[in-house]
Image (spheres, rainbow, N blue to C red):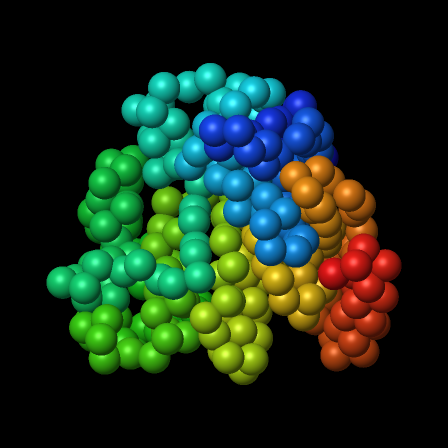
Length: 250
């Protein structure tokens, strides 16, 4: 299995506050990692540091063997655009663009595919996520769940190696959360590595591995294996994770 990320001795501080302390972990290509922990444990800071959205104070982040923590802003921005996808708690779609135009924009900006190919990719993604019927709608005229699925399409338009998510279901109700997570699990099953921060145990139970942060350190890890989707298996995973989280003091 090819290693996509190798995080070594990662530290991050803001002024006099140490947020991450000597973080070490590896991510194999195709894994689905959930990062959990209490509020203030450093979850989002870790996600931003390993994805190049923020720079660690010290340590190394190897992306396919290349130390991205040492790259300048221009080179890092290009890697994020062409090789990484990002989804957040809110969709952050541009209000003056339709659903379709929001999705294709990063594809046009990357310039690695023709406009026709980008549009074809967008159409395929919208069909897969069930939002093709609202492709030309104004973003104010669709549901929150449709907006988040559009955000996933936008994140995937350049066929990234890894999809990063910071509380991607945090603003959704339970039924919409299931729909969005079904999409993310499908993307992962097709080979895209997924790394998300979440406070929701039901969401984390869909990951193949859960990393628990406490006071800026990796306190423990739980390997759940590939998510199959069967209801009985899902309940078993959720129970196992809940019991483990209780031991962590979550």
